[in-house]
Length: 161
Image 1: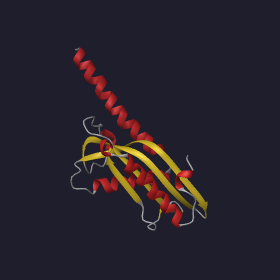
Image 2: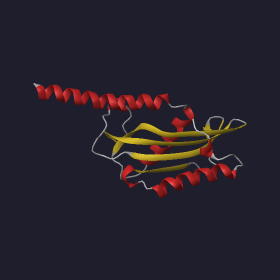
Image 3: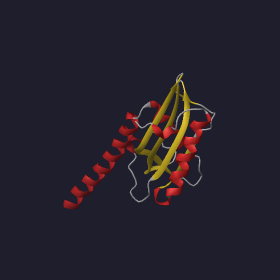
Image 4: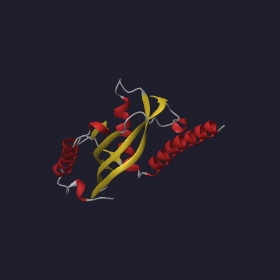
């Protein structure tokens, strides 16, 4: 009986965690959600990915709005594997897997009128968290800062929100 109660509590905690993550995704401003969607789209395009992934949490969000309805977005966040297969449409029933490492993603892109611009090309870099090095983190930031410099905008990571 005690084992059944423990199993129910653990199951509820796992379901609650994936529900909380979906709520965290829904609370993101639209410009940031578009970047998460871009990372998920890229991740799902890999043949080796077998599971459905969900947004887990933000690490760093930054944006610059130089005017004229233009924004430069930088977002660093975690994605987490679920027990659902890749391509799952209704992810509300997907429970997180705790036997897989988080995926650490950073994206940066330019938006105009709320839509991601094709130029400069949006940058998406995702890697399993244990494999992320300090050099990779530095390269991400340098790439994104260079993206905003090309347009004459201030450094992207100079503004945090």
